[in-house]
Structures are given as C-alpha cells and as structure tokens.
Image (tube, rainbow, N blue to C red; front, side, top):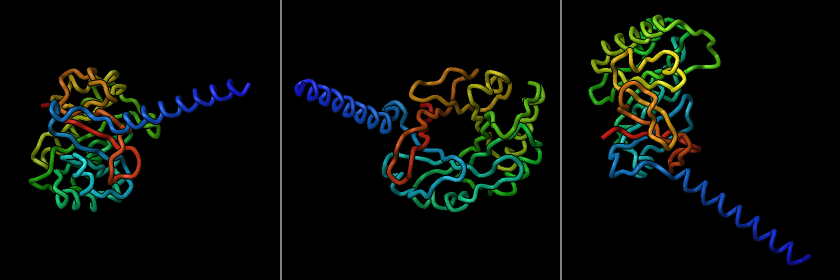
Length: 225
C-alpha cells in the first residue's frame, strides 16, 4: 500500500515538473533571432505599466501601442508610452482598433487628431478583427471600401503606408489582404501563418510570452527578413 502511494506521488510530481517545464518553455519562446533579427512587442488596449528599458534589454527592438479604438476612444496610456519608447531606445508604432460599427472617416479623423506625425514612427497598424461589442457585418464591397478609406486618410496624415493587421476570421470572410494592397501583419501562435493572400510583413508569433518589464503575457512579433 505504502509503495503504491509513493509511486503515485512520484508520478504526480513528475507531471507537475513536466507541466512547469512546458509552461516555462512556452512563455519564454520566440522565433530565432538569427532568422528574424527584428523582434518586438505590441500591447493591447489599456495595458499595464511598462518598463521599456527592461523590455529593450530582453531583446525587443520596437513596440506597437494602441492609440485609438473606433471613433470615440483614446487609449489612456498611449501618450506616456509613446514618449517613453524612444527614450528607451525602441522604435515606436501606433495601432488603431478598427470598428465595423462606426464610420471609417470618423475613425480616421479621431486617429489623425490624436496621434502626431513623427518622422521616427513606424507605419501605423490598423487592426481589423471581429469585436463582440460590434455585431455589424457589412458586405464585402462595403468592408473593403471602408477599410481602404480609413487607410488612405491615415496615410495622408502620416505620409507612410499603413500595416493591415487582419485576423484569420476577418480575412476568411472579406479577403482584405487580397483586396487592399498594403503590408500585412498576420497572427498565429508559434506556427507561421499562411491565411493571408500575400506574404506577411509582420507576424505576431506569440500572445502568451512573458517578458521582464511587463506584467502578464505579451504579444511578441517579428519582422519578415
């Protein structure tokens, strides 16, 4: 009886240790730098405080941060992070979370009013994903036209082409990456994504990596060589 208990305890301990090792590997994993020399992070809306100097020391070359959501929401942490990124030696890029429920013109005006045009900024990323808070699903022609309108207005402001960060579900329904000729930012944990019509320029390779300087999991991205 005692031997059985000891054996069971040993098995359980082994499983715990294996699980911890797997978790440690997964949360520390990123694509090899030798293959993708430029790597960095992108933050979601309302992120926790970030020590950008530490993030830089852990291998990040750039940081993308949410600036605006739809036509009416500004991220409260944007301005502070926008100023802190270059001070820490990182390149900076702004993200707009696009809404199918609001006018693309109003969204572009909101973004252009809030985000300054700076020479050192990376191309703006327009994130097009389905949001539970917005049930509107326009037909394909309208969706393509509206996202393209937003892109052109922002490009007039920034004088740089936008990045199209499109989810697999959105691209399956609207084929935005085929219809809108802009560099693509694709999403896919660990495995390089293949769902876009053109090769991706950026890849969010993990949304669960842990990096010193940021509390909790972060989105880790790489740039195509």
